[in-house]
Length: 83
Image (cartoon, rainbow, N blue to C red):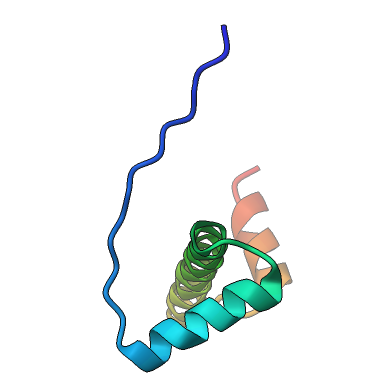
């Protein structure tokens, strides 16, 4: 059975100059405002997720350096030490 997709209206307030830019961008992209907002939100969410991933990578690299793990060979040595 197919489920109907529901929409939730969302009101956003923008300064007049930004609202005009948004309208122009929607027109240039040949999208309505809702489509443009959804695309912008998806892009923003993806960028946030990527930044969280990179922050985890940076954290892991800092922790590895503290423990003297600097190369892939160091990682392999730890993994295979007790095998």
